[in-house]
Image (spheres, rainbow, N blue to C red):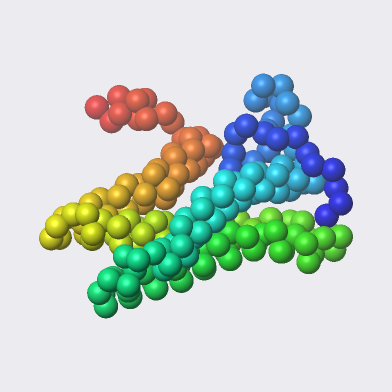
Length: 197
């Protein structure tokens, strides 16, 4: 894992399971070597991890400070259980999103960068799910004090639905569309529509 970092490519994601070489026809660039590809993917994982870690650490710090406020002692049983669940989810998200750093530190110099990148990608996916759940529980905990009735649950459900659309549905839809375009012999959609008439 002592290779020099390869060039950063603007397109593609770090955790894509398939290989994304850029042929000479795409902007005149030479295809990536396996070493360049794994270095680029590792650099992308590091950038994504930094963004996610910052968010989860700020949120987790806020959650820990709540227990020492005067209002905390007035929480009911349900709200206390929700708080405990939120803190546990936040701790799990923090540990999962920091895990790629530990992986790299323990496996540095073992010529296992490809395996480290794949494991870091899986940890990032898991950490993002835990982070979304932590945000949802935090929002629910706060809105139960501010909004009367079941409106808090409805609002949190709407926010979690939006997270699901932005974080999971949209990327999967874009990946599926790109896979259809790259399929050999696949005709563009408008031509297929006109041929069917």
